[in-house]
Length: 481
Ligand SMILES: Nc1ncnc2c1ncn2[C@@H]1O[C@H](COP(=O)(O)OP(=O)(O)OP(=O)(O)O)[C@@H](O)[C@H]1O
Ligand SMILES: O=C(O)[C@H](O)COP(=O)(O)O
Image (cartoon, rainbow, N blue to C red; front, side):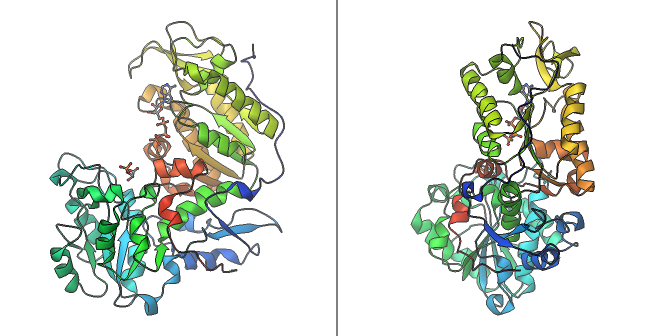
């Protein structure tokens, strides 16, 4: 039986960089000088300190992965960028922009989190400032046919405010009404199409529907990172009928961090993986084990690892059919020379509820009838000490049931630690989903190097999968900066 008195640590840190041949999202890795890259690269990507989402902190850090003479940066994902298009390419042109404006709305149809709207702005601004006519498209929710509560109408005021122009809204996404509104759209104007998922053909990626969408425009920009893992008509099909088809600034930034910084990190590189179940994170853990030096595990999945090591876990969440897998992941970490840390103490509860009785116990001493709902203070300290040594950190999945205040301490402590490290120049990447919600809850989202706007899409990228919405875009001509 493994001792629970100290973190389960395997081997020393790796010191060599992983091979980039494992990256399947086709990063274009170009050599750069240690100083000359940043401002040029940033201008090329269209970021500025004034951007609503990409503030100075993020802008000043992007594209500085790696270190020393071997320093290399991901200039693009080998995809043509909207930043490559100038006024000569754009003036008077109708540009179909697929964004992910799938935002949460309250019962009064008010946007409760506008992150995705703000994230879409740099691309749209670049286009309108260069005289293009922007046809803006998105889905919202998962409607089955035309469903008023999934209309994109609530997006118009916020988009108009952020862009500083009145956005025009169509009641359809194809057809004569859209064509009429487009005919009267001025250069620098934005026409927001209705929810593209009101047509079942969208998710079926039907070529005839994609062709109709494409027929509205002269060229295509995909900036919908959150939907890039879907091969739908507006994310993939449309590229077959519109050239050029290029990546927007948000899509590029997501790829630069979630693929670029992760596959070519400044080292030591730590990955923190939490969440509920190990089964939903197998791909992510296996992929990160190829790249990281330190792996910290938290969340509900740790109990499957404990049980695999012969510890009793009370009524904690356990996936009985994943015990062998947990053992093989521990062995894999060891063989790869990755330092894998499991929490040594946990906060346990007598029921799954916000008002449960709770106490801190060693991971080896969870009594029957109690369940682990957070990592304990000793583990937080051990994790923080390990993180202190790093230069790049990626985090996916909460350390505990952070929705209940009593069990949010471990998750919040990690969020605060990453914020502190970010302030010291460590590249900090929050890989989507609930960890983003946790970082926002603590109020430290602004200081992280990158907060992904994608849930499923970011997980798939971290698993090393190719995203159809990215693959479909035109290849870039590599440019040395
Ligand atoms: N010890 C635990 N026991 C049970 N559930 C837990 C535990 N720790 C964390 N969770 C739950 O895990 C959930 C998040 O897990 P998930 O795997 O979905 O993470 P994620 O990848 O960040 O989110 P998403 O799936 O939205 O991308 C949270 O709702 C949290 O309450
Ligand atoms: O919110 C998301 O993850 C994206 O907008 C994709 O939405 P979907 O899971 O409904 O395709």
